[in-house]
Length: 402
Image (cartoon, rainbow, N blue to C red; front, side, top):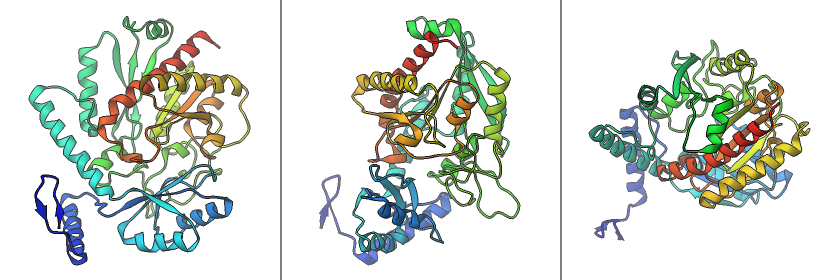
């Protein structure tokens, strides 16, 4: 017997009982139309050498696919995180053990975290409806975010406006907020806005984001489809022109890092390219992702240092220090290819090659305890610290015109 959270006593599930519970969960998920990840685990492996990295890469090529890399095999100094479906756990763990690859279980049951998130969202939604407010400490659906954008623009029309810069593959609006007015509470931001505008693309992949709430919470690509190809979606951060199709991207449409049929083939990428090029005077670009706690600059597709590498290195160092001073969260920094891994066709490489000297990419919290499933309680602290790093980059851009 074991104690329940409420202090009572519940029977321990037998193996048969557990199988029944899993089956019921899958049936319920099917009824709700959402993918269920009951029993799926995230394993962490720290490869000792290139041979062990190669053994891990071999897992990615198995058909049917047995693992989903959250942090792929890059170099021995970086941990590898992979989600393993419940049905494949026994085989994958046996493979790791047979090759001497030690692993730790980072997340014991993914569905437990997803259920907690869903319950928190429902609770927050009820509270918001009763108080006509918007909670920044909860996750939201695309519809809720777009409604917030409309309300925010209406309430603050003197400082912000909404731009529609294109449409997604499934014809959803791609929106950008333009902040133009002085902001008296922060001298740095006020000085920046006296000279420049700030543009915010809050949701860069509206189709994929909507799909995470309607069907598959762990979906990462967009939703484009093409005749004769079974798998859908392109990794939008592999679809840019710089280094397109090179190392760190994949030509397999079923891969999470599928680069698409051609550079800027995806409407979500093409819209941003057209917007930036038509503006013609963008001085800094910041691309925000999760997870790993890193601040990086070009290049991703090449180990070659950029011409102002030293300047970007010191700016990243200052930004990371500003971030650290908020909540004591430590980030590492450097070029993408030397800090994380080689990645081709990515946003910041294209931005830099297009003349945007200050191009940075964040990988936000955490370092793997929750991975892509960061608890909502960490949203505001993450935003607070990240803002101070962005503020440092904006200040440097202002004081170093080009």
